[in-house]
Image 1 (cartoon, each protein chain N blue to C red):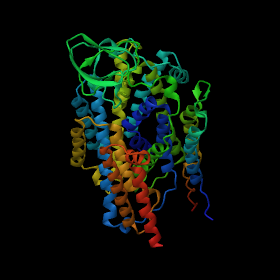
Image 2: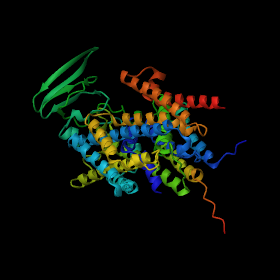
Image 3: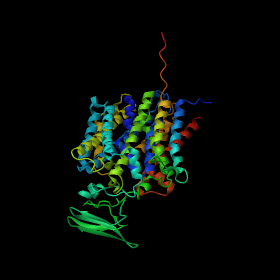
Image 4: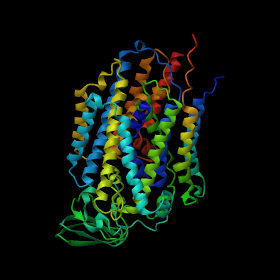
Length: 73
Length: 494
């Protein structure tokens, strides 16, 4: 079985964040339009939560591992 | 960090930056989807680990030239879109179209042609950021509402009405500048005045019968339209509207603006696919990228800041200048400082200058970064294509010439992203086995041909639900077609 790399995890999480917006919009009874603290749920998610989580995912999972230190001669 | 700046500059062209607030103004949910796509898709594309590519000797000549030529065309169309936007902005701010075009194209060409200025993308991007954020903070401070409170105010408005200080009410503006695609449909009685006179054509509704009427107005003369009447496009006279009347073309209310429209899944998927393959072509094709943790954070934060700016700018613009809905929201209007009564001169002019500098800075950063992007794909390895002043003069000159005729910058950008994406995206995201560069080229040609076929169908108008989405976003069909060729080719090889 292929090992799941941290980058693949990060990419999968980013896809989930995108999918979350579509799922939230598809919820019945206009759930996405419910206001919380002045903003609709859709805006909280699409405008704030998902982009901020995207940044955190990028920092945590998308960076290349640090290069190994050069061997001592 | 410089390479990350270049990624941001290639991706965040002024058209893309302004398309997000424009979409947010049009319909909140569609704008949020666009913004989220703009932020997350580049990260998805840059995410997969760098693959070790076979040495250039393993690539045939066809396979080497195809990406360069495709990307060259894409860069040309992107330049065209942004220079056309500069022309629109110039007209909207009261200058002549050619002036905006010449200044922008000349500055872009000088920057790409003059070797010492070629590494200025990070600086230009920083200038654009500061120049865009300063007016936003000033507007927020002058309005006295934070972005969330401003959003709440917009979303609870009973109707979007002309403010008394709007230029459309005080001095009037030429209808030619309101060149959006939405019809000027009036929802209540509205008296229009032509300060300099002119000819006005309208389709009026009398009971169930419609009639087309043409008025020749003397300077200062007025005409009254009723609910259901519609101004026909083509008139270029200056018109004054009445204060506190509903803006034709605006959403029915703040509530209607904020709610999610009926499901348009395929359109959203079409936009996502266009951006996904477009980002793969622009940001990744033919490159071996290694992002450090700082680099990944910097790129993601830059995208987040751009999206945050777009959201706040859209909300303040709708709150202070609901007249931007007149005739449909266009990108150029979002580069005007909102709220005619918010600032006195010369402060207003200074802030407006900041916005123009921000737009120009973002364009110049994009131009420099696009040149470097193309040079990195040069199969000779010397980056010749990026350092040929004649080629870049032809690109900027051609784009400037084409921009003299108004074109929709957003449609051009989608065309560039979709075309380059269908040609290069599938093979970038799903690379063929080593030594089979010809398969990538075949897949790219098929994807591009399918894309162009559906893009040409746009000229004939939209089709039904599924066909309409495929015609509106041809990458929805072109990219899978290219991927299918790759998959079949891999199967045969196996």
